[in-house]
Length: 244
Ligand code: NDP
Image 1 (cartoon, rainbow, N blue to C red):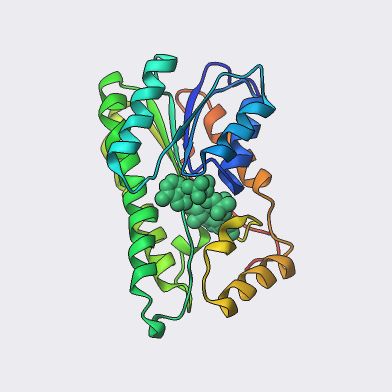
Image 2 (image 1 turned 135 degrees about the vertical axis):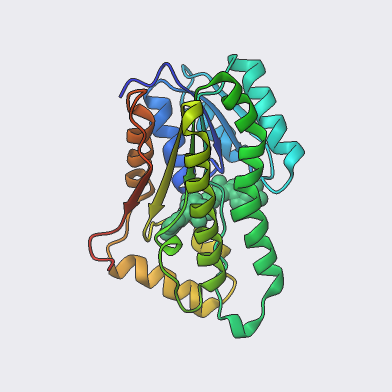
């Protein structure tokens, strides 16, 4: 796909779905601003594409000033932003009865406030320009509650509601919104699970379901970005075929 006319910011680009999307969009010729805390991983991706125009910025999505800096640096470097992809997330699942309040707090901060920080930093610019596209990685867990994953699902339900509200609020400003809801995908996300039984469950689930590769989710993001101006892909649910 030729995306050489797109400037895309990817929050959470250092591994998994974000890294796979970065590589696919770089192949498509998109101009990229890649952000995450592990900037060495971002620089590795940049080094793989010496002919691409890629900006890498260290940023923690829970810190609004750092997110704003990513957006400001992107506009300074490329002259504009066409797409913001909010992809950063963690999934430390555990039974509610264990009361892991620190993990709940981290999930709320990264999975919800991280998305809102991206929107807050970008939307005024896009609304003024009357053009733009905001994409967020949600989850199948944003559609159905699950035992031991209640708080993670709660963050993804919240993000889906926020993105749907954003769509309705900003359609008249010609802003596209896309919710990408993957099922089980083989990434480093499972490393964010501290409960050993839950980590094993997630890994076994992915293997038994013949789970997705991050490149497969990236192809959905690429499709949404590549649509014509008058077409907005509001939501995509992408499951492994064996995942009910
Ligand atoms: P990874 O763990 O491989 O990637 C997570 C990304 O989020 C990394 O780039 C990480 O970067 C970034 N991130 C985490 N915390 C922060 C932070 N505070 N500030 C900035 N970046 C942060 O997992 P996935 O690729 O699987 O996850 C991507 C998204 O996909 C998440 O939102 C996840 O919830 C969602 N998802 C994943 C599924 C799966 O089965 N894998 C299924 C459904 C949804 P760094 O650590 O360098 O900051």
